[in-house]
Image (cartoon, rainbow, N blue to C red; front, top):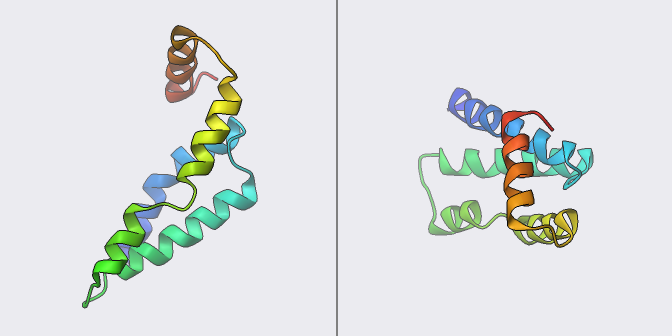
Length: 94
């Protein structure tokens, strides 16, 4: 079970590092997200799973924060500019 949880967390790390690099999260917030995700993954991989565990897993606490920080980061950019910036971020060139 621990190997599965560790693998799932390691799959998320590049995405979180990228969000930190562009300034949407601080290092402290990334650590907090990883800690929460680890706890939720363990809950989902135990023998008896509750409905509340699934609900907590699919409702990230920082989703609103990401949206508003992204809006501030973009500051009214055009769709084309956003798309090109997003593509550069995804390919690791920004």
